[in-house]
Image 1 (cartoon, rainbow, N blue to C red):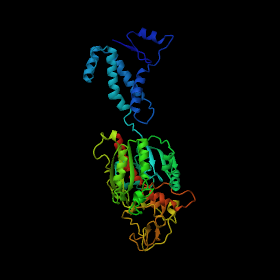
Image 2: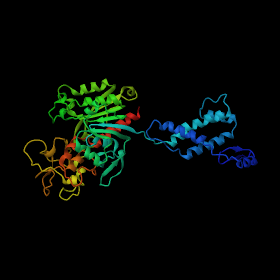
Image 3: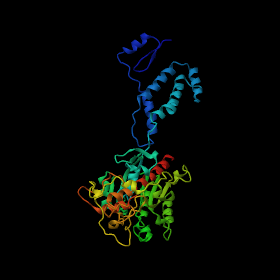
Image 4: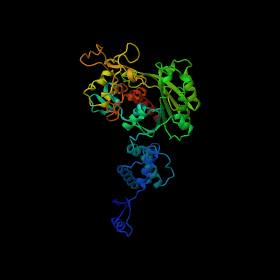
Length: 466
């Protein structure tokens, strides 16, 4: 039997004259948006679980539904029931034809249309950053991470960078909504690179005392000041006001109630008298989290530096049951890269146009003390510390192991210190026309962005499992 369909509203007529009469009405028909609205509603239900906002439904999806509904209208009730049986759809018994068509349409939306309309929508997470410094952890989570290709497994790489052998990594789905620190030069570097987001240059203890209204965060990160837990420091631990700053971190976690928190600290936390790691775990546990830690040796994860750090993670107890027992263990990107790879593209300070490469400490070499050794290009650099200042390690020494006898003895430049930490090779470290060695301190305090990236990958995996 010949059928005539209105191209505007999709209504079906058995006679051509009926269609002509329909088209010539005083009140013309309008496009039937019911199906499109239905598709839109289903899509937005899925998107409501993300932070992606409104998504415009692909007209192709709507057309598929309309085409199938027209086909359904031409079938008998018995034929529609047969379709339901083929698709294992239940609930058609005793239903009218229109209701059976709705069952078929809902099935198609859920199992065929929606997966194609939004196949790769990635949920995004809000990040609160405490003790942010110049943003090492935050760069890893939320900015463009750029590293030498020998530092990273191929599956993490997005594209090549403009400097030979450096690569852009795939971005992670985090947005920083709050940062804080008390070091002006750290915030200045974050500002210069557009890494600062709602950055408060204020003591977190003062903000808590003033009942600051923190934004919501799915994740809280922070490397609470570590000098008093460090092997290289005075190891005052809980006897220091800085050593108890972690308690402010605990209070922020208690108020915000994120799904996950991450704290980074020195490995001295595991060995100093009084077992501070147990006290820290106990305090975070009291506010509703399962807490675990892992010792990370950075040189085993692509970072060209013998920097050992304790990574403390906590997951909210009401979400814990969805995770495996080893939910906190970072074990990806087991790869090694020596510092020579990161320095290969650099020019000497006297010919470089990069202000950060031009700036290096002129402190004389001493017989004893920290910072008197040469960085071996085929080795891992020692830990870059905030306390270095003038006595940061030497890039080369006279008759040194790097055999660069035609080049002068000098200490590491600001740029070289940042590269050891895996900060992007194009990041801004000094203000224009201001050669400032103060950048050494925030660089030494920072979490290497590549370590932040690997932590972020693990947190993304945890959140995706919830």
